[in-house]
Structures are given as C-alpha cells and as structure tokens.
Image (cartoon, rainbow, N blue to C red; front, top):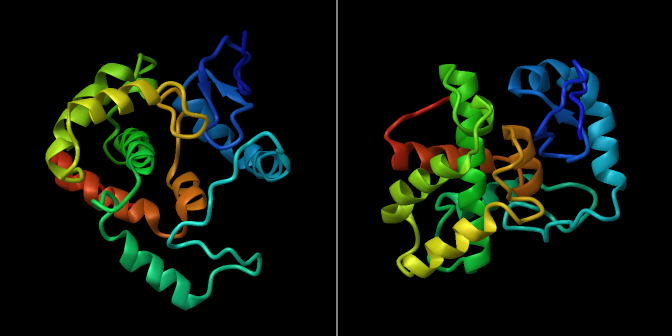
Length: 196
C-alpha cells in the first residue's frame, strides 16, 4: 500500500522522476511539487539503482554542462524526434514519453483528464495514441513494433505509462528543449496544439 504524500490516502500515482513518492491524484502531485522538488532531485541524483540515460544528441558528456553549440546542435538533431535512423528501443521510449507528456499537458493547458489524471488505467488511451501516431513514426514502423511498444509501456523503468511526467522531467531525461520537440510532434499527431 502506498499513501499519498499530501492526504495519506492509498495511491497509485507515482512521481515520474524519483518514483518513490505517491499521490492520490494529479492535483495533489502538483500541489506538493514545491515541497517535494528538492528531495526529489536529491533522491534522483543519488540513486544508484536508477539507470542513467546515455548522453543524447542534446546532452554533453561533460559534467560542466552543455555549451551553446551543443544545445543548438541538439535542437537541430531533435527536430524530428522519430527519425528513421533512431534505434527501435529509443523510438518506443520516446513514443511512451510523448504520450505521458501529452496527458500532463492536457491536464494543465486544457483541464482535460485522461489516463492517470482521470484516475483510470492509461493503457486504452495509450493504444489510441499509438494508432494515431503510426503515420508519423519511422518508415520501418509496423504491427510488430506496435506490439513491442504496447508491451514495453508498462514495464520500462523510465518510459512507463503508470507514472506521470512533466516538461521538466522530459528535458532533464533527454536534454534541454526536448519537450518542445515532442509537443510539436504530438500536435501534428493529435491535431491539438498546446503551449507552455
């Protein structure tokens, strides 16, 4: 049993970053963020069990932080977050994270709750999202890849539809500005543009 950090009710919604704090719903998760933020970032930084993503096109392997050139190159390389040359596993993870960010954006910018934000199983909504996304995925995408991402969406340690995610989580995981590219791509897929 996991209790909400705000009201101590049995909860299933888990912080997408540290994955150790639970909430009864997205409202309490948002309300608790100012208090939870410092502990969350510290837990994430010190966690030896959390796999660290390999530096992507927008991330510098240097610990001194990305240079302006690296950030710009990363932005240009990410203009197409679902390019044909990406490894299949990376496409699966990005697709799951596009959906997770879409759910958060719908809640924030339109007041619409789907999946976890409606306190429902997110899987049916994810299946719809994948079906809509298919024409905008790499040319190699087919039914076996759809089956693979639908299997992965509940088991992956990071890209998991059971956990909420925010813009800052996406940018921290993939690199600065990546949430913007996912949002642009998702607007194309869904026909709904969200900003923020």
